[in-house]
Length: 292
Image 1 (cartoon, rainbow, N blue to C red):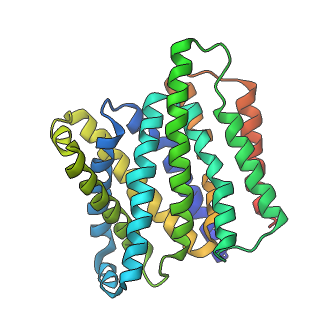
Image 2 (cartoon, rainbow, N blue to C red):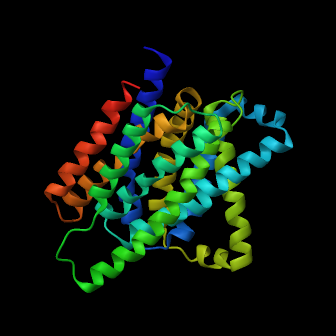
């Protein structure tokens, strides 16, 4: 197996994990701005334990590299994931999740500008297929009442915010030092995000609300931290180190299909032919990537 195909396999593992783990967020009742702290803390502890001796590599980081980790982690987790949590809680899984796939075009443009990827028409075609597939899958069904449309607009706003922050941070992941192993690198990103959240919590008083979080919701967000922030992100970071941000994100952009299926089967969300067409575009993007 080539390194590139190994990267695609790891990206596929992350895709499956992210597609299913939205169940934890959907089952919670607490705001995502609080739940993100529990998920990040769980991820930090898990990654620290699993990193073992590799964690000492972080002591060799320069100030510039520390700054890169902090900015990337804060944008990916504190800002991007917090908005994503809110999008899922306010809207349908089959709508909120796919909209974030629009980030692929931003990632492709930034990666080319930073020299992380060379422009290829095939790569652009794959990215466009993912973009339009995500929009089709995430478009709300017709016949929604006023309350449902209002919830959709709120979820859409959160999802677009998450999309922008993720696009920037996932591009920056391509600049992280290669000498740092994936698990130690993921630990550093999560620790940076948690540090940024603590600053926010002290300034806003959110830490008081965190102390009142119900036990059920704590377990939900801990589960998300274990599956998404620990396992999936470790695979994601490792894959990016091998294949670069655009190629990996094109693979992981298919996870809204899993989330949409979860929403349809588990939460009685609407199913339509539009979802089928969007799914075909997403799958077409992955197939196109194999020839780039």
